[in-house]
Picture (cartoon, rainbow, N blue to C red):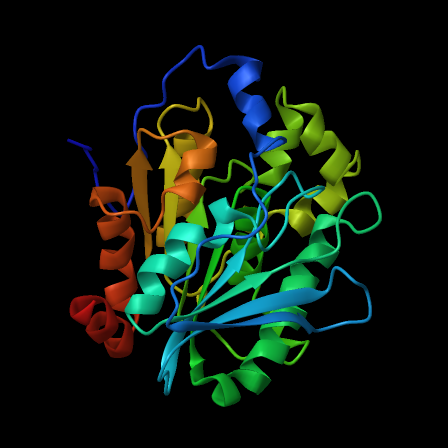
Length: 300
């Protein structure tokens, strides 16, 4: 039986001795192009939100969608690799939530080394703005979007939620909440001043001022939307980072919940949407964000 502890503050007890081999899953996440999509879903591929080939998103539209809530998903991959069509990114999520009448959008964005993480967050914001403008034509409600990201994508989502002006300055409307799937890069300054993996140096460089710009914890303020932080209790740093971030959120009056799960970094992404207590815990948070989400999940 999967034991989930749901709480406002505090993460699960992280196991020590995980080692660099497991941490390397941050860089190499198994991916399979394509996925098994329910026949009642229309897929709109490669919607452009910029001129770069990476500035594209896919839309999974349930049959009969009308004023439907939306989950906008941002893939991980150490700010350097990854793809919106990977099965671990969309497979189980689309399979489950399309049956609930939820529109799912999966976003690509420009990658390192050509585009730094703050500009990547702006890419996600640009995608959100374009999606919101077009959602009525796909049966979605532009005012009922939930942001979700995994790993480096979770960092980008956390940065937007903590610093929403990055998105609103580019024409995006505010979202309902954010789901942050297993990011240990929530306080970038702390990450970079302690021993860390090389992937963080490649992403954030050596300038402390930039670390602050890219650090969600350094922008948290009243007005950020509710957030759920899922963390792997198999990793040494993930749940402590989530707990510290949730405590900072609570200190400024922002609702933040931490869900530790005994799953690998990759499984936290790939298994979300599969039947079980983990998916149910995430859906319990989704239900609190808007009545339309509560109805959709209850009717699934």
